[in-house]
Length: 286
Image (cartoon, rainbow, N blue to C red; front, side):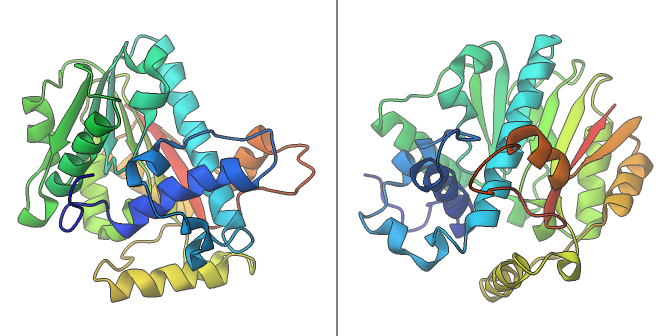
C-alpha cells in the first residue's frame, strides 16, 4: 500500500467514506446508498468500527445525512446526464466513488475531480493498486488551494469545455470557506454555460440544530478548529438562496432534510432519517 504519511485524505473525507460503508453494515435494508469503495481505498485496521467517531448510535443522524445527500446528488447527476449534459465537476472530490460505482452513467460523461494534489495522487495510486484503474473519462484536476490557485483555469486545462453545460457538485466544503470565498465559487459556477446546475451542501447555524445532533456538530466544530480548519461559514436557507441569486443564478432552490427524508427514508421501521437544520442542499441553475 502507498505511503500515507503526507498525502492521505484528510480526516473528514475519510470519515465520510467510512460512514457510507457503515450504513451498509449496521443499518437494515433497504439501504439508501451503497458505497464501500472508500472503505476499500482506506483499508483501515480491523478495529475501525470501534473508533469513537464510528459509534453506530452516536453517528446515526450524521450517517443518514451523508447517505441522503449522496443519493440525492447521484440522482441529480443521472437526471442531468439523461438531458444530455456530459460534463460533471466535483469540487473537493475527496473519496468520491461515482466513477467506480456507476460506470454505466459515468462512462457517458467526462468526470472532473478537483482536489488537493497530495490526496488526489494517493487516491489515484490506490485505485490502480486495487485494480479499479483510472479510465480516460475520469480526469483528476489537482489544485493547490493553499497556494491560491484558482480551480477554473485548471479545469479548462484538463479538457473542460466552457462552452457546454455541466453539473457541478460541492459537498461538505462550504463550511470551511469564508463567506466571500463561497460567494466567489457561486459566482464562478453561475458563469458556466446556460443549462449548468450546481448542487452544494451548506451548514445551518449550530444553534438551530436539534438536540439529537447539536452535541455532535459542536464537537465537530471544536475538532475542526483544533486541527486548523475551522468552520467559517453558516447559512440559513434564505441566506444561501439570496447569495446564489446575487451570484447570477437564474434559478435556485433549497432541498431540506425533510424533503430527503420523504424521498428516501419513508416507511423505515428503524426511524433512520437525516436531521433537520444541520447540513442541507442548495440546487441552482444557469
